[in-house]
Structures are given as structure tokens and as C-alpha cells.
Length: 171
Figure (cartoon, rainbow, N blue to C red):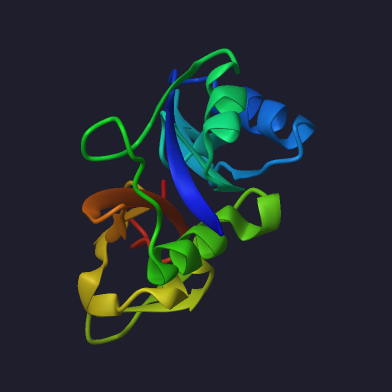
């Protein structure tokens, strides 16, 4: 049975490992986003890996596939409780992965707007899929933190936003 697993890889080598897996015919994902970075008084954008050090792959786990994957440079290990049998993603976790992977395309920042009473509304983007009560929004830094479960462990993700800044914060 084909399931989604998580590999721990050398940080910074995620896309290279993903490409090597795809060359072997293994479906792989590395969720990435376009992130606004404040530098030298202005904003620039950079492509950022959402979960540094991790690559997701879909395969039928077997000894043969294990050794094919482990032979790829920069693959450290399959995530799992004891190192012998890897953990696989639940159905809900796979759905989160699909949203974050965006079909292999880089995610754009979610657009937010500030409401007159001080609240925030998510206008568009991946953040629309998260309950607003579970989003920790930092308008000044143009970031939002959310928690998702991966292999049964809660992970905090930082996602980019645009809009919603107060006039004195946008300069």
C-alpha cells in the first residue's frame, strides 16, 4: 500500500533530495513559500522551505525501497518512533501536505485585511484553510504561525501574509 512518509534530510538539501526521488519515480514534496524579508529598510522576497530538513514521499515501504531512498545523498533517516519502522502520515496530515505543497508550486503569501473592530479576515491564500482562532498573526513582520500535526507530532509553521498592516507599520 502506498503511503506518505517523512524523510529527515540535510538542511538546505530538500529540493535536491526531492528531485532525486522524482528521478527514481517516487512522488515527493517539499512545501515552499514566497516570503517577504525586511532588509536594508525595504522588503524583498525569497523562496523559503516551510519545513527545513524534511522531505515527504509517497511509496510502498519495502526493504528495496528503503535502500533506494537511503542511497540518495543527504538523506539521513525515515522519521519513526524507533528507527526501525517509519511512521506514515494520517489522512488529515496528507491533506495538510497537499495544501502546503500547492501542486509543487511555491505558495504565495495569504492576503489578510484588518477589520474595523480590530479583528482580521483572511481574504485569500492557504491560511483560509485554518481556523482563524488558531492563527497567531504578526502583521508587522507579515507572518502568521499555525500548528499542524505531522506523524502525530505538533509542528509550528510560519506562513507569509500580505496586507493588514497599519499605516505606520507599512513604511
